[in-house]
Image (cartoon, rainbow, N blue to C red):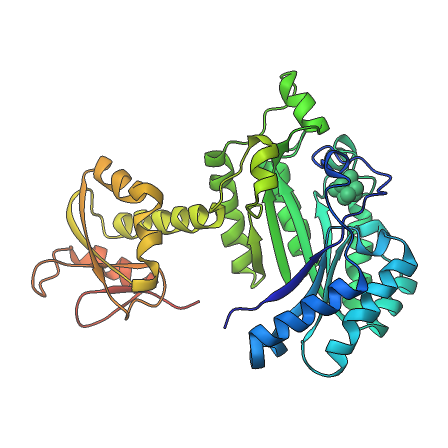
Length: 365
Ligand code: SF4
């Protein structure tokens, strides 16, 4: 069963900052602060629903500034959640907060109340970008807080945004590299979406900020997805969570309700092109073996990948094959006769396992 969170949103209505992308001031008053009783009820409901799987789930306080809210209020929420950790109903408590709202004292408190995972809203590791977007903290704060969190034995999650004001693809790639060097257990990547009532909206309307389009964000985030997975860092979120509030307030930028799927499909398309290129194929009918669970990724949103293959001169046939463990494999359509020249075959064999049916299975990493 997939990992589950019992998510409670804790808005930081009194936040002294005004990040360029945040519309908390606009929505203040619409978001209610959860009470300890809300926490207990949510936990009891989830426990009844999840049954024995609850042990793998976490009670999660999201909102981005958990350790910066009123300390007494923070403790009452934790005290409501902690008994569910002590009696083994749930696996732990997850919180998200700002990098400059972490120190030894608060980490000790969190530890004593069953918190197991801390996510930091890093957003960028460029101080210029952080300043331009009024984050109120530096890249050094992210590094310092990350080290403290890891040293205290918490699971570390880091969040970054791509396409912020004054950022670029190169800056975002550098941010990814610097965050990966902190060895987070999990990552969340959010391409910037411009919300009404924010400074980004004003900059966008004045023509001073050009937010990334969905296509631009997919191109970059597909690279970042691969980058973090190559380093065994799990991406637990890619793209903003869809909601009515988001749809009503977004005026530009890279919002798509299935953003991660778009990136996964793009990655599959790139792998397909690599396979075709390695095999020296330039067009014609090709049969692709695809694991049944990867079919929709292979085909792409609105059949985009199939259309692109047609545009390149290929007539793709798809064969669902549970033996293809990861991604896609080529299969000859010549009844066992491999049509590729020996050099192409040798080259392929370096990167792919070849089985008796002339299928080329990506080697497991
Ligand atoms: S994103 Fe920035 S402005 Fe919004 S609540 Fe967090 S710190 Fe405050």
